[in-house]
Length: 327
Image (cartoon, one colour):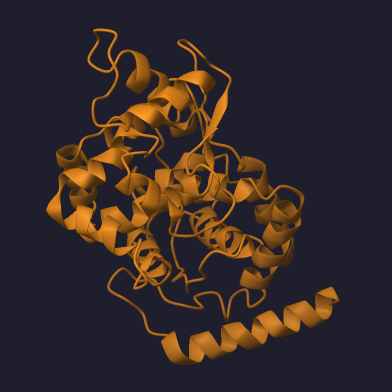
């Protein structure tokens, strides 16, 4: 299919979505926000994202994770994209964000959009749309993304440390973290399912859980012993380089398999296993391994809800010319 035909189909799809959903919400976001100011924006974003994902599908979970990390710190304002300066250590250089990747995708998409509509489309919206498009391109769900976010001007490593949920979190900590962002216990269970795709470094989340869980050289007792034995063959103490699948055997497929492994106490992180510690999250986990699974339907609405956290709209913030730099 030619680019022109693809653009035509995308415009038609977007027009239908906007006709049905073009209503502002309480945060000032709406579907099709750029229809008048940059009508080709979402099509350009989709096509440019596809160019990257077609070459490197593993970028899809990375971009989804980047959107998560952005929204949990200062709200979904693109602050995770800002570079550090000599006077400020930015979010991307905080410990939780050091393994983030895919910034070149956002920069490439931003350049393409700026060439068409200078100074119109925010980096925060680009990140939200790229995350959605990347997931859909690896056969994951597709959801309508309300746009109209503006870019923040503040990005500090400490804010990231204070706000990004840790893979070491227990259920009480997870519920408090998600609740502080206006997300429900069900949202926690649904959004945790993003771990159905992607990989992690062994250190620190996995190796500490395997070799020094309480600081006494022990293994997390909540993990399945057989799975722990398998992980110990992959991740040795102090291993800084080895990568391990978050959803073994299914990490490239956006499906419900994650919930199956969690139900067997084989979630990679302590935060995955924690879902079995609460009656509501446990019930959701178990319901997804039955024939009545709702995860693929639930994921989009939960992402839309997360994408509204702390947004800047109207005249707040700015529209960055380059995503890594404050204007």
